[in-house]
Image (cartoon, rainbow, N blue to C red; front, top):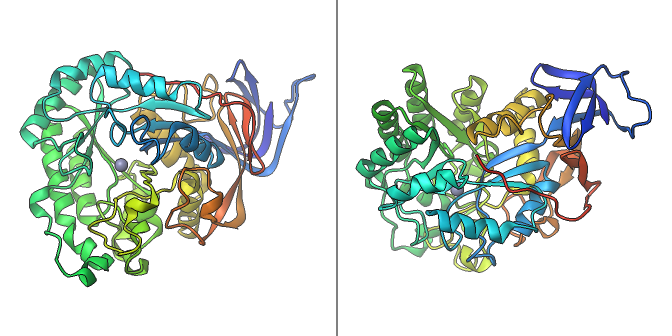
Length: 443
Ligand code: ZN
């Protein structure tokens, strides 16, 4: 049993006691309603959040386990208050574009995961016939790219082919996630090494229009097929305007943004700072504030980390060349604190964190009967969160595989004191506890 004065439930932040049985929330009672003879964890005045659900994580195992693996990624998740991770279908080898590949991913994950893990399948050119078998095998939905993904085995899907996939995914009753940038609006890399070191050059090479035109094309596919389409890592006001227009038109289109677009602004990124490289790029402070307004009015449904690490050798740290470096930001363990630091500075409360980082992503992944809220019948995945404590990020102490992150050295607000998975503590005062007890999730 866990009780506290600031328990974040779908009905608001309340003083409550949470009774747990067989790993699930059995009852939510008055603060005083403590069952006799049951061990009691007192949260006191700290916040009790639902375990977070991160629907955008690149684990990379098998095949690129030296980049990131299930053991290290899920330890980072547990330490960051994330109790459910949904793995992206690319950067592992094989990519999760067939039922056989999904079986390989599940086999690689089994026995070593500290939190629960689900899987997105992939849409790539030519794998239309694999979508139903992937769905039957438990893929929570599907992910596709409209531009080069960065890895050869996960090619971009042309819009005409994506529309066929969307029709199939609608038939299956699943969801399609899309990296929304169109190649025709991107600028080529310059030759000058000095220009290639400047983040401003990288940013200008992937303008907001590449995102907004992609979102418009996806809205049209949502209209013609009725497929639920989710835009991952939205980065710009122009893209947001297209999301808002689609939602006003009652199209089944949703969007997420990520901590790095909400926390950083491109004005702050130093030249050669390839730890900040991602696509679409981190943009200016004006764009960042537009994304916050999108979260405020629910045009943007959720925040996911897009944790996508690589070995430091892939980040072109010597040259600082933004065009040569791997694009991806490592942030899983600090996603909550970074988002909370920026959200609380703008007046948002912890109940919004629970919506953006637990309830909405659980719904996206079809996991809302088990995950995403402190409610009777859900898994007892909980986080004891100190919203006022601060800490300085030390990349070397983070649990993910390589100690490289743009958050290194930055002071963040909000400390995860304890994380419970199905009622059992898995992280406590800075340490992972117990054997890995994560389960594999399926739709
Ligand atoms: Zn990603």
